[in-house]
Image (cartoon, rainbow, N blue to C red; front, side, top):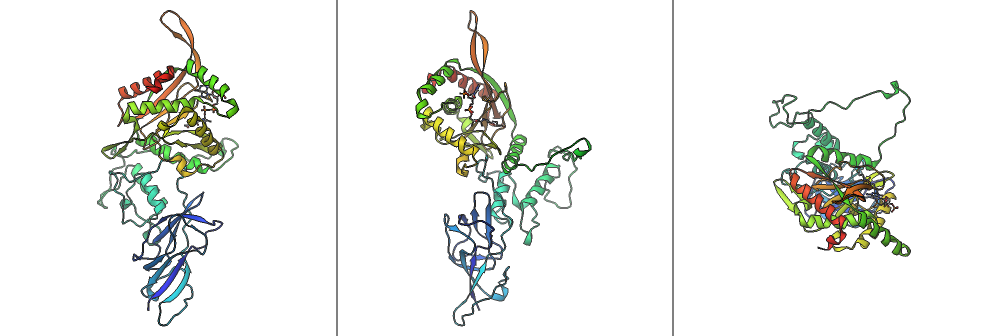
Length: 441
Ligand code: CAO
């Protein structure tokens, strides 16, 4: 006898009214126990709601954007045979002799919430080079995690329930690859430890620091953990080269100070960064390969100009993005930047505030330093580092004159950008900053 079963959101702790961000089933689908039905996303984590029963989907009670809490009905299933439905939770059924029985049950126990990247990381779509498995048994958050690291889930062995692939399985796979024993299609063939294919790294040093003195141990913040993984991947996978240039910003700085005086009452603060963002847009227009992303053997040229800027927050680094910077004035950029920077410091940025970037700027000018090597924010192909401006003696042909010089460090992905192009881009940028009227050209 078939049974109609309502699958509900189970106990999800303190979370209430969480939006549904993805629905994975449609009416008519045949699903098995633990198939993911929907994903919910709170401000801190994403949660996959798996099915407690096998059966055919008869009705879907939620859609993307709906808010749900514990007990909200997610789907109605028709289980072909209650005894074979193999529910994860055993609950009493309301028998209805002629009609299908209706069983109300919570979904299977939700796996530990997986924190999906909310910060500093661009959204990732599967690339042509890494065929993302449609058949591997993994939750959307694990699939997302694998995509970020370009891992094909078909190569990963799942150790979770019913061989489900977990984040730890993906990590273990990466460790194997990094140790030089890259996944080998023939199970009996093992590769020598060092063929030059993997990084062949030594294990991380395990040291008992207390042997040398007193210590304090604090867990890394969530932002540091997430951005750390991205920075490591980008540093290891992208051949970085940094081109250093200096821009004479003497006149621009005078102009900026004048503007700040004029706009004081309107609470607009013109920072050097706002001018830099606009100047970079001009650079991207003139040198389109800087506004591109690698997708396998293809280069994707973007026709929009979204500029990210690194913001230092008490919890770590985040990169909010000024969208369509080409369509905004310096004043609009300054206002939006200050709002985004404030939200970043207060931990109020939305995931969408940090997505869609084409090129990033990391400005340490307000803090110090003469040059540095910023790490490219993949899948972008270049990033501009800005250090502290200082008065330098500059030869004008007849004498040394004091000029305000600003160091610009442009890191670029050498697979996409040649050294000569990088030098041209940086010199062009310096030229605009030298005489900001050029931004109009
Ligand atoms: N040279 C000299 N002084 C500079 C400068 C430069 N290149 N850039 C900024 N300054 C000065 C500004 O003029 C300002 O002084 P006034 O208040 O007198 O005008 C002061 O430094 C502070 O600037 P700001 O912080 O208000 O503005 P900003 O545009 O420089 O920075 C933001 C905004 C969000 C980028 C910044 O707050 C921040 O977080 N910086 C750190 C970024 C970072 O961590 N990068 C590293 C990433 S890689 O780990």
